[in-house]
Image (cartoon, rainbow, N blue to C red; front, top):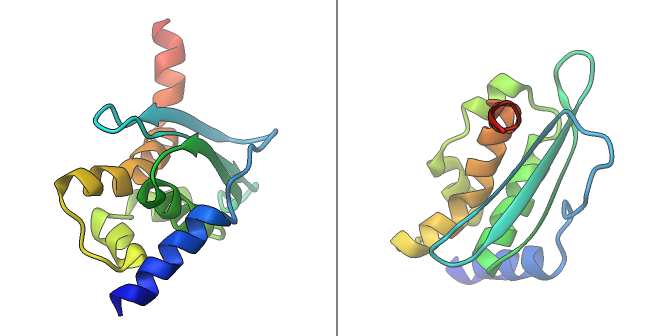
Length: 130
């Protein structure tokens, strides 16, 4: 079964479905993993009812970080902000389907960290502080 999940990770890394810059978005955040150098920008677009209608990410990094971002952002379409706030580390690990050590776990969770930072408005907070 691990081979199937590894194939999904490689496919999502080589052929991401959600790797795009949204010109119009409601939530945005950028961060990096200083341990390995992975970097990521997440964009989320909402409709008037508060449902995510589009999502995208940009960035560079290992196959795990890029695949987890692609899987996560694809799963967000049709969800609300409250739904996103409820996504956990275990949800990301379920999407990836393989066990990860501590270093790879940080790679896998970068997209969740950046997405939640966008949802919780850390981008706005940082702009106010500068």
